[in-house]
Length: 457
Length: 106
Image (cartoon, rainbow over all chains, first blue to last red; front, side):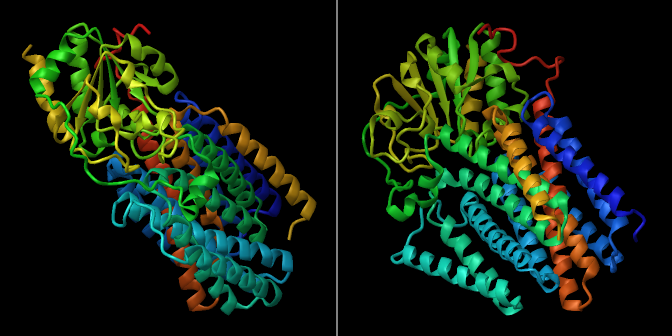
């Protein structure tokens, strides 16, 4: 159908682009975030209706059926996914978006005569394919389907170099000849490059890579806007590319790492390679009753939740424990490290799910000055974010990452599954400190027992 | 093909807007923001619909329809899951007071 003329089409696309800007703007503040997201969705709806009403389209029933299939897949997954698996889902959605952009570019190659447009086709295919394959690897790492440790093999940098050269050559042929055969070769090289780029990244850095690949997909979509002569795709893609780049930098800074160090560190042997060996050194282990006494008679308790809490689905139990302690007159706050959980901001989502009030969540800068006035620091399923090696051991993979300085609290209690090191794979000296006690077990299980003991005090 | 200078203008302005809107975001919202930005690039669906609507050959149409499915998953799934996360941030029910709300004097 061509109900809408080019003028109206342009105006409606502009409206959609404005919606996307407002969506990003809204998402930057807790109060307006949900409305922002709704505005973004409305913009997307306007854009999709506009394309149906303005472009000369055939196969409309099939296209609508494909949209129905995509929605039927996406909505239940998005509704049911556990909050702990959020990073995987974001990576997955990002990957399929990149894949879609690459396919759109391949199909549009036949209609592209201008070499500049063909260059945009090449860029979209390559970046989209890298994003697709790279995201697939991050999903595998986060689901622990493949090792979270950096995967390297001899000759990997050489292979990477060869792939990059091959991609440049194939891209050149595509621009010069418009050949579909070379385009397919380029797609394959892009997929291989995506794998090689992300496999060497250590587990702790995977969230940064998701954010970076998100920016990549944005750029691919922007380039597809040039290919199709569609300003909306150009603007929306550029917006995501730019904001994703900034977000990646902010996240990397919160972890005390540089983006280039994360992406290429493993090639130089400097990424998060650590030991996963268990230590045999003695530690002081404790009982739920003892922990309950420590907590129940404290004046001020700071809870440091980590990924272990999330995997154990213990966020509701810890919220209950905080309520029980507060009822005894104990001041309880949560200290949230920016990268607690498996993605920056992930822990805030999990605790919000458990109805912990926003005001009880302290960020790193707010929490650290308060530790000297804190009687007990209760660390639940966290390790790397309180590891003093980040300050004291220059060779450690997490060196330079700002940490929660729990060692300054009067007493330190760890609820841990085992002595196994954290995601970054390095030992935590704090575990062996004389003022530290450990309660071993599944986080939710331990919390339930501590909660019972606190109520019995 | 659009006028290259117009294109460049649009891109440069969009880059600045993109930088500006997220530069001051709190780390508490990093996950939903990443997820929301992720949903926005699902708008590649518009491109996928255009190529599918112009595909003449059954093979090309098949590939284009796959692109439509993938893009829809990105777009629809992205907005739904972001909303689910943000719904939790918003659910501060005064009827169910929780730890720290009253005692937290800091």
